[in-house]
Image (cartoon, rainbow, N blue to C red):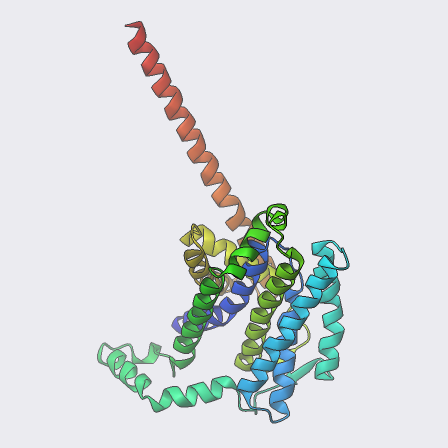
Length: 330
């Protein structure tokens, strides 16, 4: 049980990067970008093929980020220059990327189990610090040595990486370009009236969003030990689930809090799915159904809670008005 929960934290930290990318397109740009399902696999396939070809995994991951950025920019061009509906432009790019990803890999699946990846390098570095030995000794003293995972390196490093990306997004969105992108998502007509190039801002925003998504895809492929052409199916829903859950639980009044909430939402989502799959009548194939139910609940509950509070406020105002009238009559 503990290992399953620990694995959820690890996976949640890696997928948090993808959720941050989705946050940029859906919340900041207000753009329903379906490219995510394709660019996630693009990042995984580019990294996998280069690693198998003997390229350093860090360079391979950087290449995946660049290709993801290009994919996002193409979606932006389809929408801004081609005047295609935002949703349709993302769907078209997602469909195109399926064939492109097959071309990149040359087959439907590329294994990485025998290859040196970012995680093998980071794990070796972490083990050299001897931190795991200290943690194991501490848990052994309290009789919980069997529950401790072999290494905490991946979890700590991925949480640190997610936090660095989160801080980078926070900083970027406070720059002049970042503020212009935020304004474009809030009110495109207004920002255009100030002679801002909203088309270029959208293209840049979508490029950055898919670059982060591709980064996550490259890391997931190296973490899982393979890249598969179908690994991106439903990824946009998972990203949305992480964003919605994070905002519902942690709030999203400020950008810094919202991006932190996305990371927390990604981890919570993985924990919920892990717990749900431990229910006897649910199977691994029910994961998409579980995801859909989680999103529905995350969307509906805040509205129900808001309506309940609104009714209470109205009832309170009516009661105060009635008491005021009674005092006036007296």
